[in-house]
Length: 170
Image (cartoon, rainbow, N blue to C red; front, top):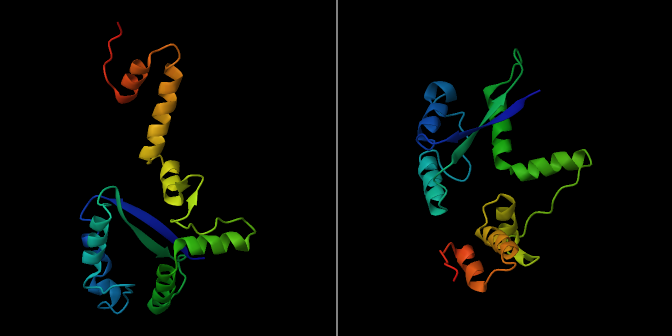
């Protein structure tokens, strides 16, 4: 049985050195066994870097390198391995995960409509909150904490605590 391993990479050259290594002529039969989706091999790194900069995603995990492995001694032609890898790359992981879950009768989530508002917040805001990256949730939690401290205090004290001001009581 073949396996696919996702290796995450932080820092480094942002993938340029890895891309050059992966696409070495001796590994790819002079690039005959290279599959590139939605770009060209010559522009892949620049498009990758530009997209990350456009969405301010230049820190943290830079990319995932998916490694396809087959059992020791299993004979697979490089062309077949490329065909499997290119189909894997063309399908969204979400789509693949949903398909596997449905095969085993496991419920899946509806595809998110990022523009639809739910319970007063968008799906994107909800997902940010679940990842603890939402400034709105941080503000709401701060207000809750301050309101618990507010019992018996003046409004000025509560506002001062909320905004980090030093309030001297008279």
